[in-house]
View 1 (cartoon, helix red, strand yellow):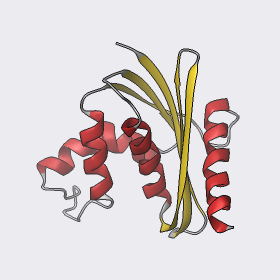
View 2 (cartoon, one colour):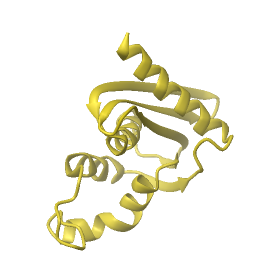
View 3 (tube, one colour):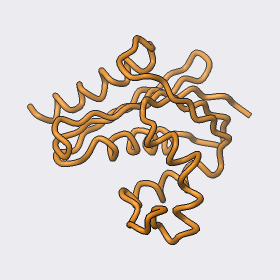
View 4 (tube, helix red, strand yellow):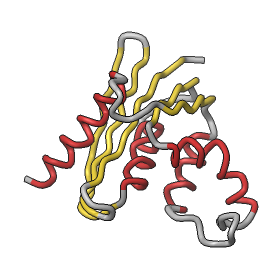
Length: 145
């Protein structure tokens, strides 16, 4: 199974407010950078969108190492998702799960792959994370023009 390294990040100016997302996928010597922006969104939606867009870009099942600075994304997919689904998309305190639409997409897209979910500290000099942070903000800037 092919191994793909994926760095993802989301950015938002105001929460809610305009937001951007980015992902960089690396497979051997090949690399693909993706980014985009939305006029009114939240930081968590942009973090999820970055991972979703990266997984949508994969052409076949892979072993992926996903690096995110979002504990919301990492813990959501590795810890909280099974409980949310079992409770009919309700949190432990019976409130509706925020961003259910994106969680459902992420769950479906992740299924055919073997994914390792890694948290990295944001703005701490991790090169891949710094790059996707820059790309997400550039996408946000480009949309504002």
